[in-house]
Length: 134
Ligand code: CO
Image (cartoon, rainbow, N blue to C red; front, side):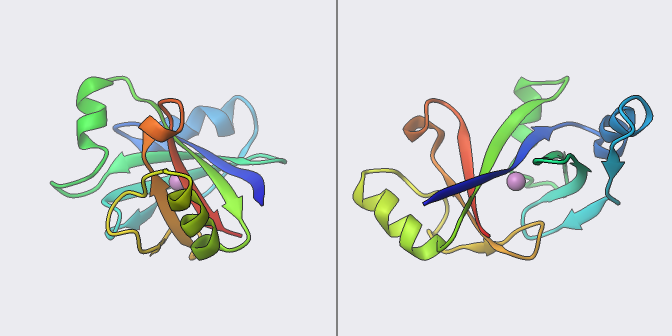
């Protein structure tokens, strides 16, 4: 039921600057910066053969990563994203197992145009988890 690791997200103040060294030093493929107003972030992806690194930069005054960056001024790992085949079925199983889904529990469209949900870090060993319908 749990699929591939889709990405590891790192919150930073400047996503393009953060991604740059991956392109320059590692020769990795870097995406363009994409603003996601619904999520309050700008994303830049570093594409690796087996997964991606997603750099997140705050967008707007109510960005959900603003507080994280207050506590982690140099940036830091923000969440892990796993792929699932059916996000609604997975959500319902997780809730039945006692996990907490953030927000109103309804999937939003994420950075890849696919439905995503976020799960409470306290239920996942201190790590914020995103699930994305593959
Ligand atoms: Co993500």
